[in-house]
Length: 348
Image 1 (cartoon, helix red, strand yellow):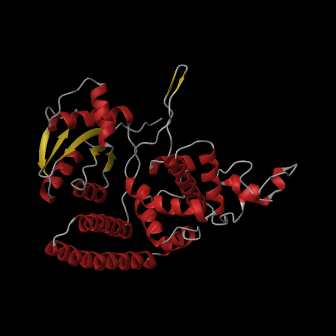
Image 2 (image 1 turned 30 degrees about the vertical axis):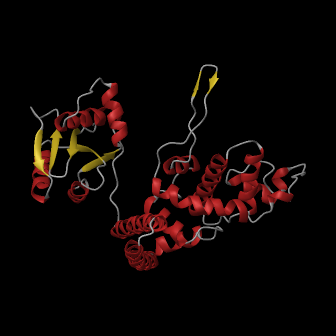
Image 3 (image 1 turned 90 degrees about the vertical axis):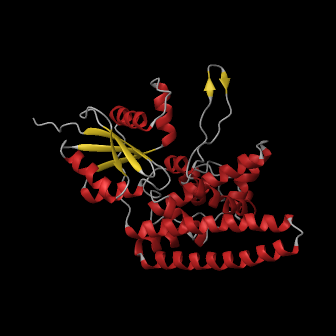
């Protein structure tokens, strides 16, 4: 019986100007320039080893050239979370931090955990993600300028800020128009956007952000979706002590975008309003209740994309007593339970 040979794991520490690469088959760490010529030399040297698996950290953009070249050459590459790799280095007793040391840590990390290979993005998704992130940056810049306008009394500064705000408004509208055209030109993205926009409070901004930043939605479980967005509370128990559960990590842009739809749903959507009020009556703080509503919203969007026949329940849980002897006969109860809303959240 033939066995697949284990690949060589190559830890790649990525900087703006260079790439430090560590492999156990090499006597020392090698350095390559972070450009087309240097990356080609890296892949050529890796090809001499046979099967290889590159392990690198997300660096905010400097890893894109390597990723595109690796995908084009058919080389397996995993992009890891820098915080997890740093925690791993501390766990193995490595407190020093240099580029060659970081590359060696990435090699050891790959050998221990065998991270899942990263998947290449389609050109349409890359364009959508770039435009969505650009729009988000413009919106943040406009928000900062509006705050600055409120705080200044100088006539020149106020006039200059107003002029910049008009420019930012025009650029945001231009970006939104381009995002709409990108989604309209792709049949799959268009269908997903229309499905998500069936939910009250979910508009074009939310649907485009989810498509760009959470492409896994509809292919994963509800718990995984909530965890990816950073809305899953993690236990903090030890012995007899029951610690307070907190959310951490996740994709910040999606989480920030979902806040306003969730807040609006707490007052306009009967189902989410009931969830919010029930938690408030239990003594939960406002922000905890809002996070719970955001989590339910993510789960609902995940179910909509996963099941084409599923429709969001249009019920009024405030008037529900759910007095059925057999709750399974209650259609609203069945719909509500399918997206994680328990007994008592449905309407007869």
